[in-house]
Image (tube, rainbow, N blue to C red):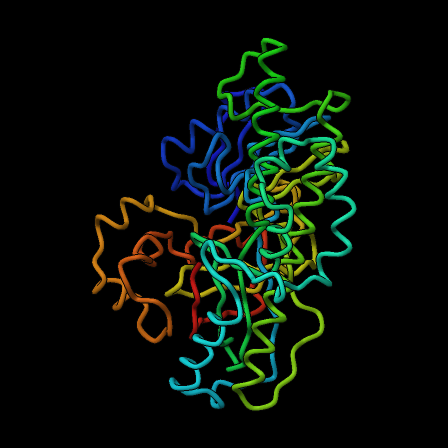
Length: 398
């Protein structure tokens, strides 16, 4: 489907791939479009919903500037998925439950982390030197992240909220491993630190912003280069975090399941990040806050909720979306609203056939709290094509 809604109340238009946009998200999109640093237009994906300052599901091209709060605090959050040679007929409920428990033993979830002797240190070594430079330039980051080894111990851990690890079946019965996570505590600390510095910088220049969370660094300013280095580091860390978990999950599965192989090339994509790209004749910084890169031929992952389908997609390279597409189903209600509205019985019914937690602590992640993933996919048929349709059979939540 083409653009369904165009908003022209800022310095540039906002192009939206859905008409299902709440009033708060609309206001946030309008605020971003009023900034003098925005290039050409703002794009909003079909899973768009309100976030902190900038809207989740938005693609924000900025000229010679970056908005740290638009990138957010879960820097580099994204997905990884790998196809295996296992078949649906090789699994039964007993084996799936065993895999579920094995994953929870091998991968720390929630706020847990690896014991120091179990942390995947080999992944950490290449990242250490650059992080030390960042910490020396910004001792406040080191102070907030009190234990300098914590980031190493959190490498290969899931985190909280909507992060998950799943076993899925595709349309042919092949088994996939898929997971969703980000840059853990160190990414949060880096993001929070630079968001505060951007606000301070805007105050110094008496900038008139529609929202302080849209404070930005301009190229050549005091902290711009430091932020680019730090956010790049956190994005690489998030990617290594996903790879470490994928390796741990596959190793655990191999102890329990019949022999199998895993595709060498996993599909890996950020959906909370910033990078330099060329669009509409200019080199710009593109922030995808809840969106994936969908350049022509590029594979990506669009997950649904823990009781619905997910999709492996191939990008069509649509220039109007800055070669982007939705990052998932997108929430239709807050976590607190979902916990008030639904009961455990609702969760059990909506996750039928999935081995997962079915208790009050994960009610905020109930499938009904999310948009219809099929409608999201229908609304972005001009952005991606479906390569595989996945249905989860195991889901481990953070």
